[in-house]
Amino acid sequence: MTEKYFDKPCWVIDFLPEQVPADSPGQYFPVEAYLLKAPRQQLLRQRWAGLLLRLSCYLDFQVFTPDETESWDNPDPETLVSLITGAGQDLCILLPDEDALITLNREDLYMTVWHPSGSLRKLLEQLAHAEGLFFRRSWSGET
Image 1: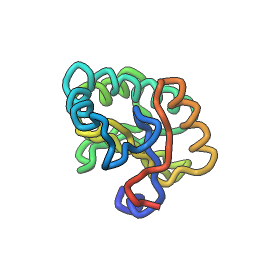
Image 2: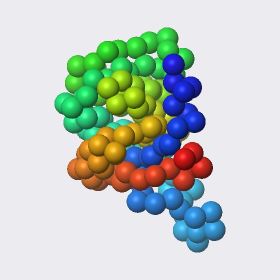
Image 3: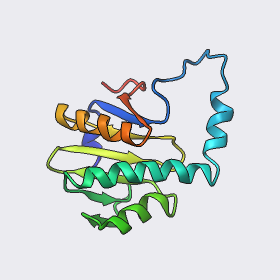
């Protein structure tokens, strides 16, 4: 169900405003390792949950695991937050009315948004800002 999105344009919701260059003199990898440890990763997932709760006020959601063994249609707020912050599992969130997909991977510090329309990009930029996050074009070559 999700494969059709992975060859479409993608954007990210990240804790950094732009990709760190490979030759950066900074400490990206030590910072990444630090933020991926509990409880710091939990704090980032709470921000994601806040953004997605707000987004659920506007759009229908279909949340599922990448292998599609579990799914939830328009989960209630407590379930949605629990899924995002709880088990540390990978999740996919299909936005059927927008024909877009959001993926959350347990080893990433960002969410990926596949095939967002212009209006969805505008809304996500505002919601990301409200959570202290950044919404920007992906750096990984998907265009």
